[in-house]
Image: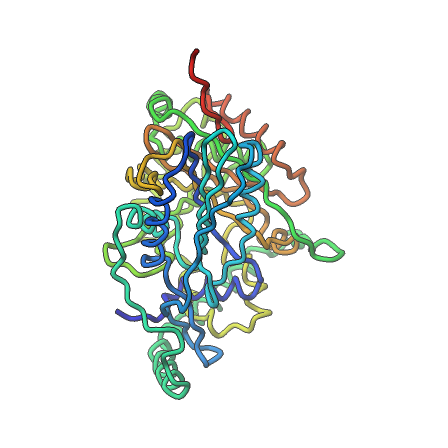
Amino acid sequence: MSNVLDPVDEAVFRFERATEITSMGQCVWVYNRAIDIDGLRRFHHHLQRGRLARRIERSPLPFGRHRWVSPRDESELEIVATPRPREEFDAWLAEQAATRLDAEHGPGFHLAVLPFTDGGAGVSLVALHSLADGMAGCLAVVEAACGYDADMHWPPAGSRRRWQALREDARQTARDVPAIRRAAKSAVAAARHARAAQAGQAAPRALPAGPDRRVTIPTTTIFLDADEWDARAEALGGTSNALLAGMAARLAQRVGRVTADGSVTLAIPVSERTADDTRANAVANVDVTVDPAPAASDLRQIRAAIKQALIGRHEVSDEREALLPLVPLLPKRIAKRCVGVATGNATGVVSSNLGAAPEAVNRPDGTDADYVSVTSIYPDMTTATMERVGGVLALLSARVRGQVFVSVQAYQPGATNSEDALRQALSNTLDDFSLSATSGWPAPVPAAR
């Protein structure tokens, strides 16, 4: 089993280092009763021996491929001693999202539990995207909840002598030369195509003047009854995947994230993970352009467009993927400028449906939580980077224990970016589809006297 990073994982790590912005996933569970701390300790123990238990060790060559290694330390389980009101849970989750994680020096993930004053509890797991994408993170949680340690044995950090590392990485670079040559040709062709496409168009918007500052991306989560969700999708001639895509398109229309002709470009992640896959990010994006106008009354066009894109995705090469072998050769300042290209369409909208998750994903303490959700977070995001990539609108959904959660994050350069504005736009979008949802973390219903 090679411990050399896949080109996609290499790119994720190097772009994060270039921008100094870390991408993470946050999985949240809510229990409306006391949590089993011993069960949570067992869950944490297996996480430390699973897919998330690895680090990235840099090559001594500036252009060399980095490698996976086993960590020298372990992440500690955080158990908050003083209960807090449930109303403060979102603030605590924001504190957890700010946890300093590092793929190179560790820790790579952090698990914490907060008891509520009403007797319930909330659990947060934050993990680096450079260690696991959504599907790999789900597998890591399921395996840990089932008491299984993933069979991934990496060399210890620092186990290679410097001359050995130089020799091995130079040989790896030599093996990569044909791919680098092909990538260079693709880069030249892509540059010519971009210049031709931009001919006669207005100059790109300049970055805002003034100091770069941190920015918090508005995020919200809703919960829907799975049966109601399925019934609505069927009534509109669609599927669960098409319904999420339709919601994404209508929400994009409401927040102004559309192309010049009013259409919406959806980026739909498709997992390419195999049974013995050791990649952190094994995902391909399928781009689908849709008309948001009829989405709330008829999903058949969106459903057909998604189906066609999925069928033909192997027939159309991804220009961004073809350029990946060049990433290790890019100076940091150039890599930083390329982030906008790597993320794709500046008005694109992510519609990511993880589908039906295994029941074990909802059992961090060995028993079912009342609510679970997952969202992406960028604690170090800045205004300059957000302008460079053109903002973000992403919907992430999964089905767990009779519920469908949808987490949404949105930031549009030059617009009013607040959680209140996002919740209102999302509420109006749900009305478009005649769907009812619960927002936030519902408190337990008091027992009848």
